[in-house]
Length: 221
Image (cartoon, rainbow, N blue to C red):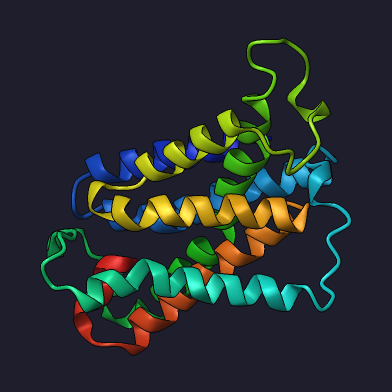
């Protein structure tokens, strides 16, 4: 339930990069639908028990604020300092990739994947599976017996490094502090739901800033 959605998403991204230009854009709905379907399957099976007991009370407002802060942290340095390296224009998201008439649907698909599927897949893998696995990998035992949000320097550092270097190179400068912040928020909230909501809000905020902002921001999607 942790490896399959995450691994399959990465495979689909790589496949999309290698397909002919005429076909590659149609991987967008596949990259959203397939991991989402897997997540739903595992949730309905009861495999992701850590998602239970998340109650959107007043503390969810803090998760939202952290998410908005992360969005500012992610985009801010590149907007303030033109000298920072960033991705090439050819790597920017194209809202017309499925055709001019499907621009709104393309943006909606990107929002669905970016602000729902990606946060769930990534947070469950990094801050539920990997962070706990690091505490038992050399001892044996089931990582699920490790309480959510238990701190150790090894798991904290390894997940921070993993989160950073699984992003493209020009994003490392913002991915590193973002990974640290999401780890710290997990320890504070004591539930994986906190980082998932913060991550989702951050991505939704970035999507909104890109869609409503000037045309040179598409690289952030």
